[in-house]
Image (cartoon, rainbow, N blue to C red; front, top):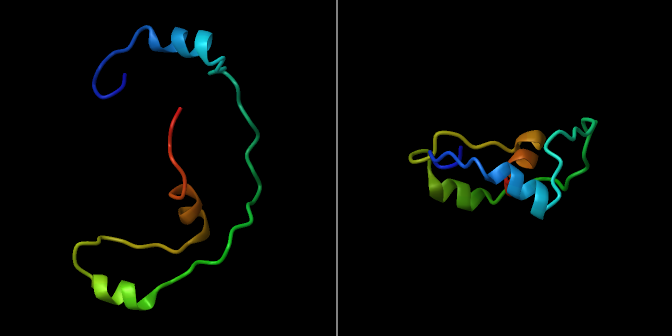
Length: 71
C-alpha cells in the first residue's frame, strides 16, 4: 500500500524492472564516521523556541534524517 492505495503489481514490477530483492538482508553497520555538527547559534536563536517541538544534534539522529528515504 502506498498513499492509501493498494498496488498489487508494484512488487512484481520492481522485481522485474529494477532487479530489487525484497528478501535481501544486510548486516547492521557497527558505526559510522560523520563530521561534527555545524551549529549556527544566531540562526537557532532567531528561530526561537516556538514552532519547533524538538531539535537534535545527536549523531544517530543526524544520520537517520540526513538522507532520503525510499525503497
